[in-house]
Length: 137
Image 1 (cartoon, helix red, strand yellow):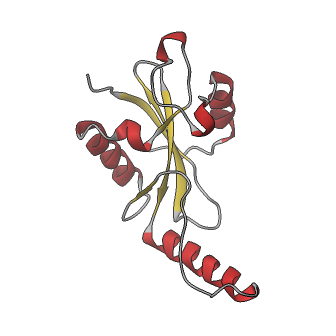
Image 2 (image 1 turned 135 degrees about the horizontal axis):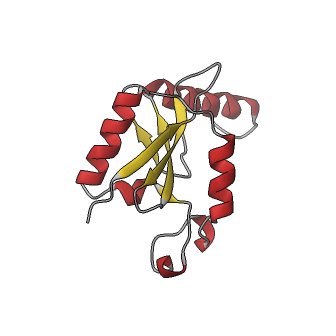
């Protein structure tokens, strides 16, 4: 059964708008989060890798980017693009492989967990929601 998003919150950056965290609350009450980025964000990360390599001895300077968590690359971070991407991921049944579940109930023990095999708690989700800057659409 495809879950339906109830709310989508988008974190906004004051100075750079090429990456943002997105929080999705489903009608079921589950809350998920994911990182959305643009190509300029990836280019900036590659440049940082290059600059770090230049400062270290015995390390060749090379442009690269490492992403420890899934990042969803989009053309731009407009609300329409993000919401359409979420709809596509839900329709393709790939949403849960890219978004991290940040709520927990007793019957969800068999579902995907965050890093380290530990699921983020409802309290963490509440902090994330209270700290995020919301772009109203």
